[in-house]
Image 1: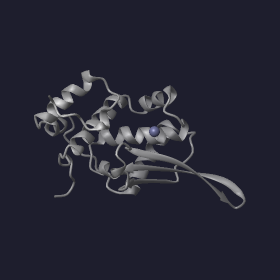
Image 2: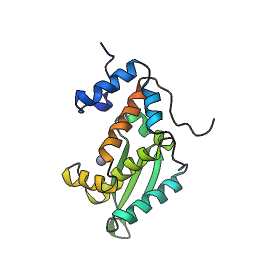
Image 3: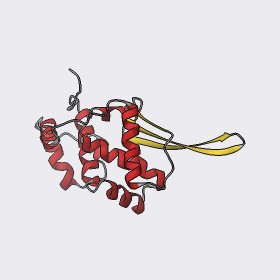
Image 4: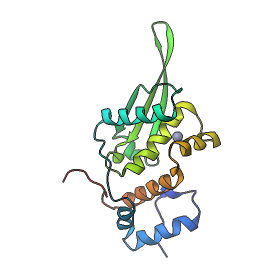
Amino acid sequence: MPTPLPAYLAGYPPSLTEPVAHLLDQGRLGEALRRKYPSAHTLRTDRALYDFVQALRNDFLRNSPQPGKVLFDGKLQSVGRALGTHTRIARVQGGKLKTKHEIRIAAIFREAPPEFLRMIVAHEPAHLREGDHDKAFYALCCHIEPDYHQLEFDTRVYLCHLAAGGTPLWPTAV
Ligand SMILES: [Zn+2]
């Protein structure tokens, strides 16, 4: 009987989750992920992340509102299922109602493969245009990152690896 997987893959069919549970059981999940994603991205600061989001917005979401703030958020780590968040904050400024968009990416993705970051970064700015997780939203995510669904799955596999006590696979400085 394999150990039950952490909840990050709830909702995926057993044909996808069973091989993951099997690798986890054998202690080979980290190794498999590292083989598939050998390198880490090099964005280290919120400023670099902001520029990355802006570049993506310029390429795909030109007519969407500017994000006010973009940051790696250390608190998102403990929230569990959130890879990132996007919030719209309405504020009164000079007698006018202004909306500020904030994009927060969970801090564990500061040390992650570029593919994972790109998937998360595609997801959150897509909310600048589409509010809900509906068909149009995921179509936009896949337009920005064609491998979106596979990358979201693999990112969740990594979260399972960590939740099961695995060590971070792409540490920057030693
Ligand atoms: Zn979302």
